[in-house]
Amino acid sequence: MLEAKTLVKICGITTVDQALQIANLGVDAIGVISVKESPRYVSNEIKNDIFRNLKKNFPHIKRVSVVKNIPLELICINSFNSENVIQLHGDEDLAYCKRLRSKFPQIEIWKAFRIKNRDDTKEIELFSSFIDAVLLDSWNEKTYGGSGIRINSKYLEELKFNKPWFLAGGISIDWLTQILTDIKPNGIDISSSIEISPGIKDMNKTKELLNLIK
Picture 1: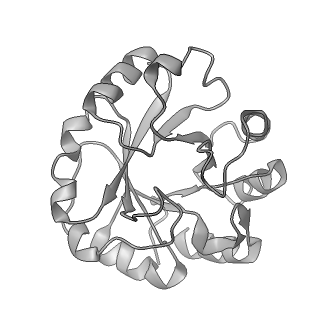
Picture 2: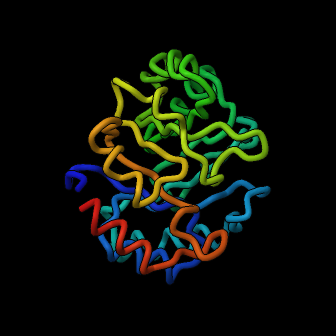
């Protein structure tokens, strides 16, 4: 059984109702996808509605807006007004993170890295001065996230970062024991493995998984 200190983020939420149901189960963070090509994408209006309801009813839960490769010149100070975490899930480089940190000092920045081989983890520490958390996801040619594909466990052995890190990519009940005993991330990020369809979570699976974690 996973230790209670393991943080849990449920990502790809698309409705207020499911956001509140999942928040009530005791998660630490809820993510909404703002990437248009994702099957879990929601409009800015729906995202803000979800986050406003979470802020009102569960203010302690991190409200994570997942974005990808947004040109910095298109981001204004009002771009992020309902979330308290921006998750960069694209090819954003060190200079991008540094400028975004300067532009939004009041919001946490989480950076996702897609891991194709062991070398992909070596440069992550360079980002630590400009981000608040690391998220490791599997590499997939067709998508930047939500593929349900796991990272090769060999690439995750003895990982240590200066910032908390989340494991994503195919997180499921049958993998939890190995995550605890061999990988030991600070948190896990769950999406497709508990879904009925993209963006719609199976609440029974979600409860079962959270019960095992907590």
